[in-house]
Length: 359
Length: 256
Image (cartoon, rainbow over all chains, first blue to last red; front, top):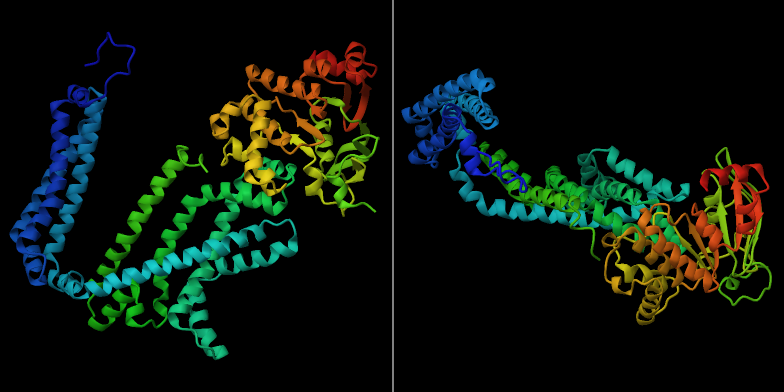
């Protein structure tokens, strides 16, 4: 329902407009598809919650219940109808909004049918064994403190390694772009070595091989920090190198023409600009590092030094119950998802130019 | 022997301020400058023109050794600065340079752009550096922009800040490398006017430009370059009125 007498402002695309453009039939497909998916997803969860998530016997009862099966059967039927109707009619819809509604309804219907079918199949399979192994969430309650402590260690390892990595990596990057081969070569060798060998090799070499071979005492936790830091330095160096080289050549020339030495130009002009540009890739490295800290699992850390992976793995080995590993995954997601979100926000901000100006 | 101190010492010679002797420059196998001999006297406004690729910019950048000549020597203020023992950083504080793409520091505001080298290179304390900066900003008519960032200024304003930044070092010569080529046409005049004011105050200037009007009105000497050589050298009005060399004639007939 566009208005003909308001050409000066962009045509409204609000809810009222959408309502006007939508057709009852296409809207029905959309609603059916969405409702089916909600049934399979939210409905299943509600049924399980009603029976109880913990202890696991309640959960198993819920999974085997007729309600669980029925809810998903409805989801499969509804979703199938929505997808057949949607695919069959979307080309003939009179408006763009109606077509999008039909397509969205069809896609949601397929998702609902697939999810519902999977749950139906699952509830008919060996639910008892699976749930007992992977879904005995009551055991996590007893391990909560261990997981929190593990998360603390994970964050500490990642932050320490990243901090050392940034400092050492910056120096390495400046060496790596030197026009003098004798300065460049050691930095390149270092960077390529640590990028070219597996982190787990580096951890074992520093934490196990060095203490044995040199008969020196390197505490496992110290070895973990050293290995992670040395490794992070190499990757950070590459990020900085790319950042420094992305700064316009004219910046160096301007600084030099004002009498600054090469290092002064680097310090006052090039590096501050490069630093701003590498914040998103550096944070990406940090997210990777958070997960890479899990590799220190191979060192025999003491219980209080356990990071998330060690907590989960240790409990898994002692109890033969994999639910602890689910707890570990939840722990990692709780740390990395906010970090990923922060990276995306920063990238958006940098791209829109809001950061970058300012001292 | 050459002493590094002489770069900043008061001028004690009566000869040319800049002297280029037999300058050759190769970029790999590309012979860009083919034996340039040039003497630039104090207070001279030397305008260098020529077709693109003729080596004008390379010649200009050889004066402060942003491009190191493959052969030949550069003598600045009585010091042979192509001598490896000379402290180039010190020499460059006496040679101001302005670039086609402004090259302001985008992370520093206008004041910070000007005071950075004053404080870090000349070791002037912050208060005095600020005074000098404001003085130069007044010079180019931009004292009200002191707190803005380069990204907030027009191209013409950025270029005038770049001029102020170079002038704040109190150089003995100013090099201008096609400083109006990146500007929108309506912004060219404000930059050329600033440069004209500078010439009127007696600054020694070497100007690579495509602005023929500026060359004629402001230049005290004109050099036409082609294929790495100085083809014609003389008074601007004379060369514009009757160019002797065929290549100069052809070039001028295309740009005038």
